[in-house]
Length: 157
Ligand code: ZN
Image (tube, rainbow, N blue to C red):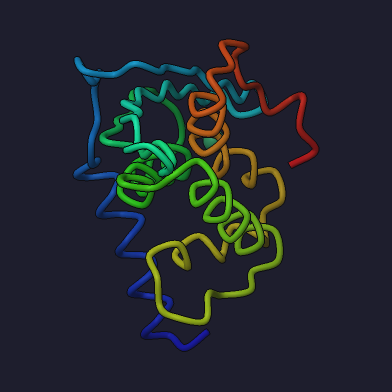
């Protein structure tokens, strides 16, 4: 990674920490899921409004937000996640998560410069991968309407 790109990515994470996007309860949410990462002490709740598609079209995420506390990686990642998933279908959200998961576990940067690439450096710190994926797990559980709290202890990642 070039030094410039590394700086840019660092700034993405700092910026999401300083000014979290879509933070707080979403009054119009019809789905909610909670995520817990006991190995680091991170918590994340995701509030999501799933809008019914017109007949023949899949439902889409009309709006979403997160709330929680924990380390900088977990909170910045949850903030970024909310900006990435708005307007997406469940299948698109799952595909984006797979992308993000590959970035944080392998350090392979996305082909196009994307804010998701800001988390590529996490792969060098395997214990922090759970921090980076916590909000995403909660969001995917909310999409599945799975009320079971997402805990990183039940995942290998
Ligand atoms: Zn953490």
